[in-house]
Image (cartoon, rainbow, N blue to C red):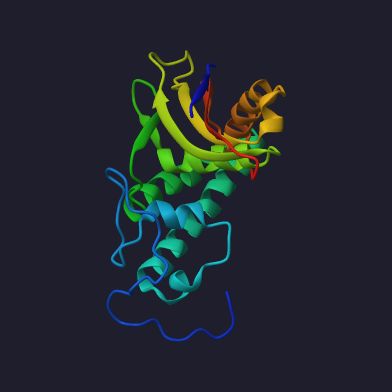
Length: 214
């Protein structure tokens, strides 16, 4: 049913040659998701970057290289965030982040987040969705399902492009009668700003299912 509310390891064996057959494949790719040589998607590696590599990723040369590239990108992004917090971002560091993202990690479904007369910047929809899912899952009785990201009409005076999010989830019966929606919207907006420096202007929440096992 749908209800809508507006608003690593020790000594590792040598990597095998050729594609690795995945005994536990990731979900089938959607739309323009980028496939690695083993059949898994780049997005599936990104979404598990904060977790230990699974058995397939440890033995797969494609997933191993993807994790190394994404880990380096995450480290560069964290350095940029620390510089920004000091109110003195280093242009060379920001350039390294963007160059790395363009050359080494071609993320699918880019979303425009900044534009002025001389430049523009996009982020991966998967990166935004991953951050939103972690926020939703941190609420008792909620499990994130899908997150669609689009850009609102018109840029803000500082060049930022406000985002419009549509987030679907499963929810426990007890949570239906709480103010989860207002609190969750606030948490999503704040986490995106604090963690990724993005501004969400609208967050629409959709309940896909009410499940006692949530």
